[in-house]
Amino acid sequence: MSEPRPSDRHDASEPDDTFEEIVGEETQRDPDLAVIEAGSRTLRTYGGAPQADVVPARPADPETDKALRAVEQELAGRWGETKLEPSVTRIAALMDVLGEPQRAYPSIHITGTNGKTSTARMIEALLNAFELRTGRYTSPHVQSITERISLDGAPIAPERFIETYGDVRPYVEMVDAQQPYRLSFFEVLTGMAYAAFADAPVDVAVVEVGMGGTWDATNVIDSTVAVVTPISLDHTDRLGATPAEIAGEKSGIIKEGATVILAQQPVDAAQVMLKKAVEVDATVAREGMEFGVTSREVAVGGQLLTLRGLGGEYEEIFLPLYGAHQAHNAAVALAAVEAFFGIGAEQARSLDIDAIRKAFASVVSPGRLEVVRSSPTVVLDAAHNPAGARAAADGISEAFSFSRLIGVVGTSGDKDVRGLLEAFEPIFAEIVVTQNSTDRALDADELAAIAVEVFGDDRVQVEPRLDDALEAAITLAEEEDEYAGAGVLVTGSVITVGEARLLLGRG
Image (cartoon, rainbow, N blue to C red):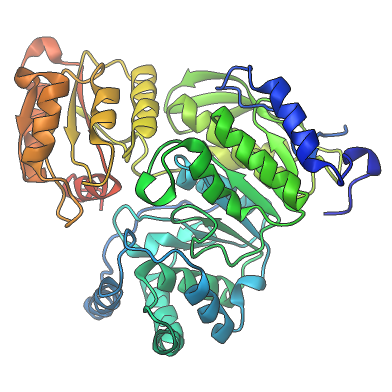
């Protein structure tokens, strides 16, 4: 981006005093607005169809499937995503020996607690609509590891995934031999993604952090646009016990001179983000101030939106996703793409409305209030923390007219399980507690003990096997004529949702 006009800056010699003064005036605002007047400068405006993205099944070719399983097994032998040594030392060493592939293309970097993957998919669709080749890196995956690396709006082919692993493996082993700890599962995948994007080559990469920001493995890129989706409490053992502490870690993706697209935040989290923007002279665009959702209404299969972007209003946007949270994700995604194109800082124009409409209409986000069966309707949502659960509960209540809703819940053991269950308690008539197949899953009986405290004994059923839990929930939804409009929501973990998706024939 070009240098801002002098009038766009405040006196750089007194950033802390200016920031504290502004924050002092603004902290009485509604926290949900999160529109504190601070930052080095604020971004104000002056004046080919994307490919469908699907969740891939296992490779049909037996040899390819065998080779992919071998790669998956090797990666699984490394530190998992929840075991961390917070540092970018190893991934930086890998990038060095690979020839810095992450610097071969511009990027948009996304952090936050909830909404990162959906927002990344929307950004990708918008960029594709303007005929840019994209690479998208997201985590975790719903069903197939290849979902994490996408090229041109579709998951990387298994053959290419295998080939990319083979290409980087010697360099991974070289770095392993030089470091106190081997590269982790996530670090190797990040290296593979950056290498695959350079090899494609892509015009722009859309990169979601794995956890945090400052020391996340993805944070070896220097993105011109940093996106911060809503921050709430999650991974508190790693990131901090308050939104402000978590924001401190996540603000690490904001680089010198970048543009920050800031979703609505708790006040203390917004303060931290905006103070970081002051320190690195970043441009800030805030939801509720420079951009946002002007209007929305429920529509068949999704919702109809009017979005206010950095370049003006965009009307009659159909988004085939449910929930107010997805509308806000759409506003954030649109602002991020506008910022990438320089709108609001360098150019006073709007993006082509037809391209925007086509892009949003093409968006899919598997496992996010996704309908996978009818009669009865079964919906999947990967909510795994209280904030995500509240968004899912609000979304399903708004978009569906269920006479009775049965929950199927399987969570990980390191989450705020009680908070998640309490968020769903008002909408679940009954709950079937279960567990997924991973070591991280909370034991079904332990989950049931917490569920009984939240729901009462008569509303809780325990089925340790997920297939039995799905069958039990569907039976409960079908059992009486008066509940002909009953539905089932499967939630609690991305892994639970992915396994349910396979069991219900969507893999």
